[in-house]
Length: 473
View 1 (spheres, rainbow, N blue to C red):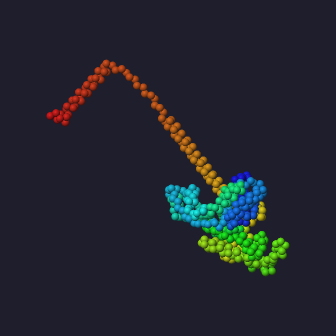
View 2: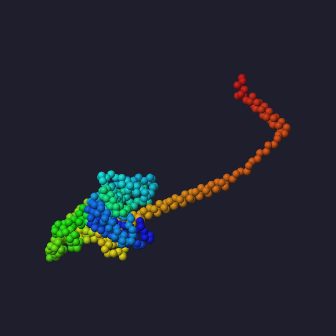
View 3: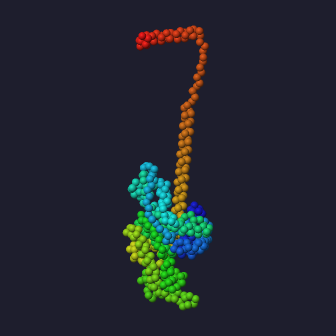
């Protein structure tokens, strides 16, 4: 990606139901995210997390990216994009992987092979796998803490949390990004991105439920022991509350949105009967007066429905009694007054509003320390992690290649040394010269007499042998 100095610049693109946000970020020397630029545009072509109008979505993406480029001074070419919507679903699956030998160490390649096996699972028509998230590992039936890499065994087992979505929804997002002149290098589930920006390591270890209340959907992610345990999507969020206010108070949609943001409360009892809001009438009509308590009752009715469904998902996951970290609410819808108290009342769990401040540099503008930007900042964090993983993989392969080359060079040097030693030891023997001397007449006679004498002796011995003489009797 584009780079300034040594750290890469990462762009997160949050394509939401109410807004499209593009944030340009870079990791500083302290590991914090330094925001270089931000762009925001109203989203008109997205409903409940899914693209319903390509042209309107492309136009909004271009506007948001242009603003981010102007602020940051960086030309944006590649982006990490979030995906959400009621089409998202999840399932659990278990896989068994047989290692080559009982003395074989588990490596990254073994884990990748198991994840690749999960991508071969049979799905419903029109679905695709978005994420395969390992949960627990077992070696020869024994549980492993966190990662099995480096351990020895003959059989590796693992539980996986698999997140799926519609192929058409993912393709529409990719098409919008490409038509806006960008390249999508990562598609990340939005509740995972949000959790990366607002949850701490301690909360994810203790057990926590993230509730991301967006414009079209409410996304849920449950963590325990630093492992994602459950994900779900509720098809109700901030937009439906705005529609309820529009209908209940008989006002325009823009007015309903302003009433929700500025005066909205999740608890009617926190407002008094005599608190009145006056809004201008349409086309010179008289001003309209709305009771804040009535506004809170409209909001409360819908928010109670959403919170009750959140609690249903918590109980369905089986972790209702294990969430020591309670509930963390984030997203644009989390800015409602008294929402924290409503969640605590219905779930019986402690709650807080999650702001993406922990991972941001100190000099970040206050407008970015807002829960509505949790997803976009989380996309930057996840993008940086992915780039670091890729760099670690490259460094490891490079180190292995160098080690292999060194080993081959040492082997070649050893062969050369052995060959030189053998050549030194096997020196050629001096040539042997034979000299033929002519025989004298006396030597010839002596040789002939010796041969005749030997023959007569052999004949004598043969005839003196009794076993031979019996053959002639």
